[in-house]
Length: 223
Image 1 (cartoon, helix red, strand yellow):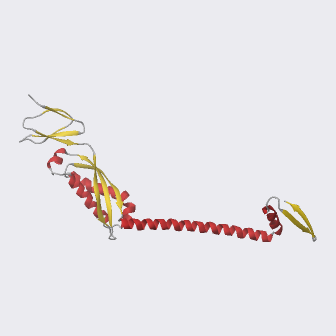
Image 2: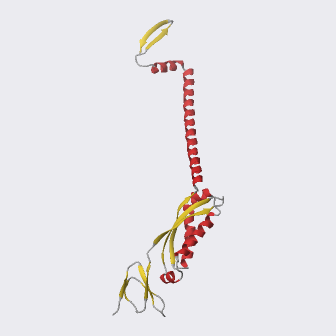
Image 3: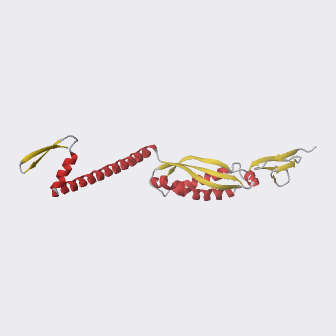
């Protein structure tokens, strides 16, 4: 009596029979061969994280960098038979590429630009390594680039100081503009006495008593 096996979509089975080449069984139903060994392989895309590692920069500071690799199995036979841990080949390639890429960069440049610039470089390195072990690397993304704790604190103080200095500068500019307006108004009142008297009357509170002198004779009134 024959035994059968079913292969689900997104997977395959490697049929290994002594004396024969390994056969790839794609999605479907198959009869098992006597003395055959069947190894399942997941063909779906997966994500693996490159653990945060300390990478030295050109200015002697170590930054902590982590990345994510999106990959899938391209050649199931090579993937299973070439190495015991084929993904380790890709993982190592990303680690080495990270160190090479940041060795000529300063810590500040690494933090500012690594997420935008390192991804394509790491993807190229990982793709070459993966091709030798039956893996297709779709993308490598840099997740985090962190400075040491003491440098993060110093950088935060620097940014705070910049904002405070900008706020003080803006306040000084506003005060200067206000003083300039007051000086212009004072000059205008000095040049036009009648306008100064009118402004004085306008500034008096409601109900105030105002006395005017006409040819030496005072006259009173309320405003």
